Amino acid sequence: MTHTNLTPTEGSTAAGPVQSPIQWTDQKALLLCAVCLIVGVAGGWSIRGLQAASLAGAATASMANPAQQATNPASQPSNPLQLKAMADAKATPLLAQLKSDPDNPDLLISVGNLYYDAQQYQVAIDNYGRALKIKPSDASARTDMATAYWYLGNADVAIAEFNKALDYAPDNSNTLFNRGLVKWHGKKDAVGAVADWQRLLATNPNYQEMDKVRQMIADAAKDAGVTPK
Image 1 (cartoon, one colour):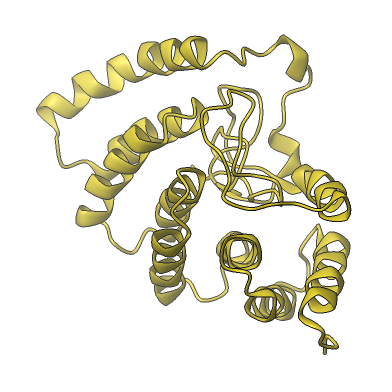
Image 2 (spheres, rainbow, N blue to C red):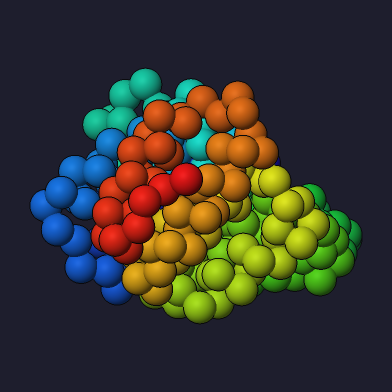
């Protein structure tokens, strides 16, 4: 199960506890809002950019599957306590299974996804980390974990985990999308972001949101004072 792509503004959430270290201009903020439509992960509403249904009604695991968004987001809970309570309830049977099967990476990732979607990012990271010790090649789970680190304000660790994910899956569109955003907004590395997004488009010719990525490339290249290839 995977989650959605980071949106350019992601670093703060509807629940509000996580603040992005990035300062946005009005132009960038508008761009980020547009890119938010790309999201689609196991159940979250940010970087998981993979494919799952979110507790909050958006994507969670991967980063680019808009089809995962809820049909009526306004009816979804946004209070962090409500989201955590829902995650706790859904995680209860999975945690019971883990008692008899503690090294099952799929169960651990499922628990991580639930808490990612509930914006309980540290709990999500803990479960993803346990799973990745057993199954280090799971690029989707590692991308989700990297995104969770970004939401907690740690761009350096996020990028390090994206790098590891790409060691196993060099052309993973969600990983490239999200790493580019963290480079641009977390490290002010517009050139690196452009390189990631150009690589994404070159290796994923059928990428559904290629027009948005091209616009992001143009905007990041303008920031960097370079001409995109």
